Image (cartoon, rainbow, N blue to C red; front, side, top):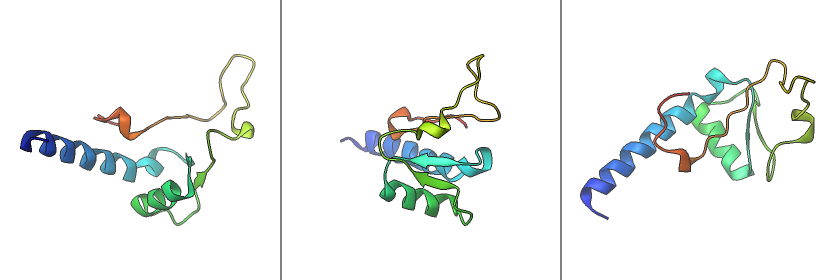
Length: 90
C-alpha cells in the first residue's frame, strides 16, 4: 500500500470513528451485530445509559412494527458500516 493510500485510509478511519462517537447524539438507541462491536461502541460513544444493544444478524422483530402507511412512528433506522466510508455526516 502506498503512502498516499495509507494516509487516505487513516483519514477515512478517523472520520468514521468521529461519526461513530456521535451516534447517540442523534439516535436514542443503537444496535450492533456482536457483543464485541457493542463494547467498542459503548467506549467510543461513552454510553453510560445502556442505549447500545447487540442483536446478532439483524434487527429484533419488535423493532420492525410498521404503520399501515409504511412508516415507523418516531423512529429512524440508519445502517452504518465501515464499508460506507467515507462518511460525510450523520
